[in-house]
Length: 67
Image (cartoon, rainbow, N blue to C red; front, side):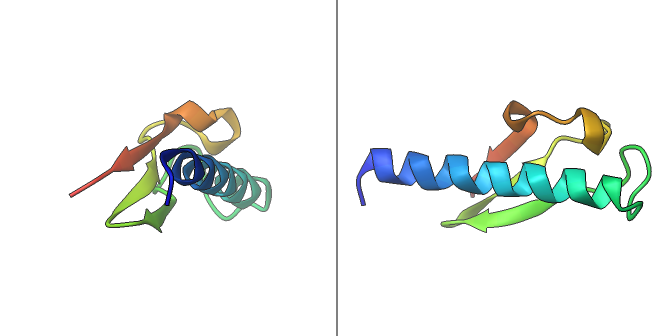
């Protein structure tokens, strides 16, 4: 897989994580900045930054973690 294709998949997944976190907040499933939302990507994963309310979260605050 090309690096561009992998970056596009990563950006798409980052958007999905962001939208999921924001929807959870909108539906009242979480309060303030409790918990994290994560998704697997390859051998690593994406995860929301701690301490940021989901309704204030931006895509650059979703961090890629690799083993």
